[in-house]
Image (cartoon, rainbow, N blue to C red; front, side, top):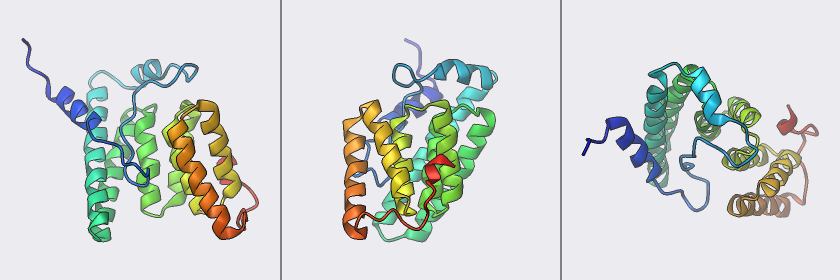
Length: 202
């Protein structure tokens, strides 16, 4: 029986990390292929990543996800400064990953997530849009993008992402964003915020 290679162990360990129920913490690793009609994700990755680079991308993604999980624990312990350092470290590795493979939408999604957690919405939204241009049916990126838009007062943009989630058919993520939107509307009286142009369209 052949020994399991280190990269396989890394990927398996990453896939074993459970998703947090409220989707406010680190997102779970996502598969490298999307639902039907989502485009040739695997073929694009193979074209953009030179031989040997794909393993490095997977390593960077796995280590970044590990940092994000630890950051979530730091945050729960009231150690926000430590969490911010971990998000920043994770983001650096993720940027390295997308330099090696510009089509690795999972890394773009986590760049969006870590930037959002650091309060840097412009790079966060740019990363989500990069992922979604390549993989429009990427439900997790849609949900996180919607949450970020809502955090910046862009109710119309958040509802646009909710509409996409409805088309994709991910009931759990749809319910999460729908709840956040309902809470926002209850708190703000349905106001869309001062920005009349949706960030989702920029």
